[in-house]
Amino acid sequence: MKNESVVKFGLINTIEGYSYLALVLIAMPMKYLLGIAMAVKIVGMIHGILFIIFCLLLFYAWQEAKWSYKESIIFFVASLIPFGTFFTKNRIKTYELKSFI
Image 1 (cartoon, rainbow, N blue to C red):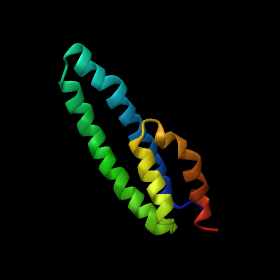
Image 2: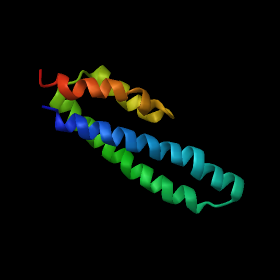
Image 3: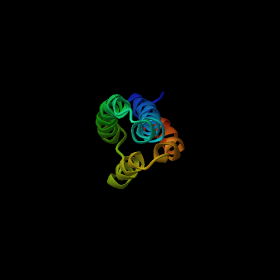
């Protein structure tokens, strides 16, 4: 049986990571190279909403799975670094079952 809050956190971790990459690699070049400022407004808003959901689900997963503060901080800091969330995927997968054993 899987820990649902950790599964949801893993999913939003991936989605939020892709939105961050879209913001940095697509929307920002469109703004600064092509002069299309609306790209950053739209993608930035989507990313911001996803980041808030990420933080909420991180909190719920931390509570339910009884992660240490250090572990939660690692997940949070990784979300601030481009490609960082993708390096934590395996760590999250181990917690999906670990919290029930």
